[in-house]
Length: 535
Image 1 (cartoon, one colour):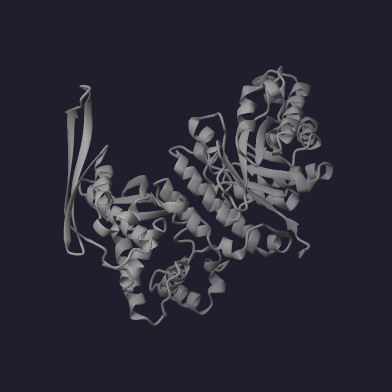
Image 2 (cartoon, one colour):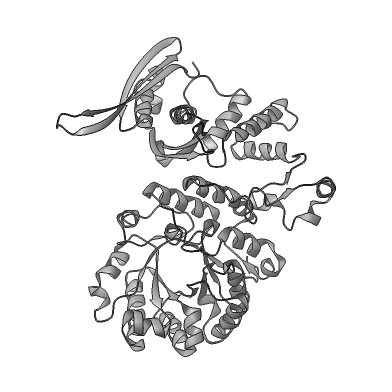
């Protein structure tokens, strides 16, 4: 069924551009998790990184993740002048990556071509042409990021245009116009893109903006109005310097605002749009950083209202004070005087986890109170859904007590090993009770958490078989307040059979205690998943 609307394609560069953010480092597991989240969100293209640039990106492209909708995209550079595409090691590494599409960056500013590359304009266009042809010959979808396009266009419009045109003529699906230094303003972007779209087909043009003047989102929207049909950006606006265009603001604006929703459509459904806030906050948890409370659409305070008359008016007519329904992006209204949205939010979360509960069930109110008290203590369930599900099921009385912990002890020792090397070894002792049977287990590891994990899973009595495939994948720590009595939040990612992954959380002034809480939740969650019988 055709809608008559122009299709907009969403291209996420978080795993490449976002990785250039100061203080951001993605592990291989992080990249895989983010890619799956973006795919479930309905993104069209996921740029996974630069094969050959570093070991993690190279390994990530050794075998592409199983994506349902998105096209897995490799980033790279056009071939160097003076050699063939087949004889360029950098381009070969990109082409050898297991990807659906390849996005190559090319100079589009004649000044950079002459000064940075030290070649002629004709040689640069030859590099663009031959590189695009090489990508197409390998069965990948080619596209070109025209670096510094807007600066180049202002300096020499004919040359900048010739770079984009050469890419399209060689077979590139997209020529992406880049505001690489983030210095172009919205009125300039709209005027320049409109001129370019008169000479090149808009349905093959993209936009890539940086946020150095706080205009990346505005510049992207201006480019869409003027004719581009591919939108590049990152989750939460991550990126080098001041960041990139923020997809968490762009996507709902394109889908919910009448000026754009009436003319355009994306490949994202309203149900997928409802996951936006969740994706934003999970990424913050992965990066071990606090979410931006006042971020548009997805921030905790994006729909927060304070003050008696204002709150009363919002309760009577929320459309007057909210430009879009918060539920549309997976967020919720927050009335700072009286949080009326709390119970409905809990019910929505229970439904998402497949847990049935009536709104008048007093246990729902109890659960809401528990969540509020725990979040005040430092717990965060946005990125630890397994712990939330366990808390909910325990409150509703549907989680068996598979085992009880009688105590644990952790020791850290620095000693010489058999080779005479000075090493640090952690040893943990855990005492549990399983169906009346007391079990004491000892585990060694390269750290206290690893040792606790080994001891806990060493012998779980009748339940040992149910956790055989359970493994700890990642471990993140955040200090919630300073000083010697600081509260610590630990987030643990676990994996089970069939590629299943989940997060659990623990909070305590003691980092080992917080870690143990998260480990216990992980094991209990695995027992429920595996259908372990009640004792």
